[in-house]
Length: 347
Image 1 (cartoon, rainbow, N blue to C red):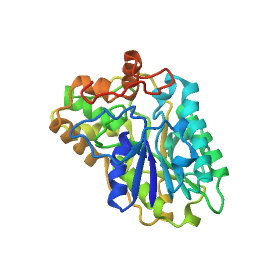
Image 2: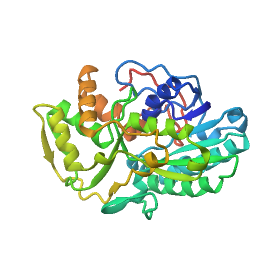
Image 3: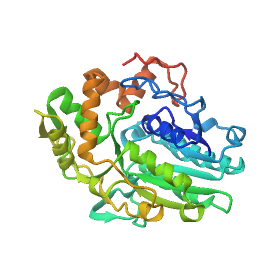
Image 4: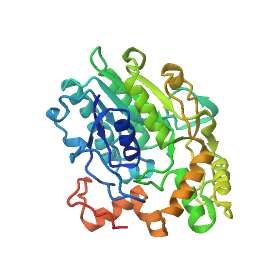
């Protein structure tokens, strides 16, 4: 297939693009490069791409493509709180507009990166896709609203699918350190402490970045009638863990480190465990392969091998801090459109 991959210069996109290419798809990226410089280790070999903000995409740019994989977004809760109106504009308005333009351009399949945080506070029971959606943040709210409008666009010629990713983890050449496992491993490697700022009790479903890529690949090729206007939780059954359990796995992966639960951030209302059986039941080609212990070991080895330092960990690889730095430097406008490219050697 000919595939447009939005956000191809981000954390998930940098891991997914090579997987799509290896599977034989023709890939064109679409990204303004907000996080293109957030590289740890060798610079990745990116596919050709359009330097276009998703708010500015034209129908003619989508013509001739079979599918759109839409990853680009303000991509976590703290980032969404930076400016809730801007989060709405980018994550909701621009996404629905992109889907409508894709349908007009004759694109057949639209795969949308949603999130399991749409479930909000769900308690200890496993949450299936049919459960009530209780978004607690502007980021999660934007995802819920997109799904509603996206599925309304479905018809015999247009197949939208929503993949509700669990919290991502694992190494990608464009790293993020502001997601739970990646963050805890960073603290362990740099300080010897696995620092948990909550009380450690909230549940978090986790999924390796490569397993996210594998989910999108299999849904891309799945029979249309089985996935049209369907939402799927993306994760692994054994990766529904409390934050304290995640921290314990990190301590095992970084010898000499110890878990420190500070509780300084107060209680975290976001707590949910997700039922991930629907996707492999519907699309048998999909199987998650990565466990949390394996991912923690992978991250620890990469951090040590590529020389992660404290400044990178706190600034380059934290989405909110990185954007705030670029805003202060004037390389981004207030609406997050780039004014100048960023160089890789900036921390």
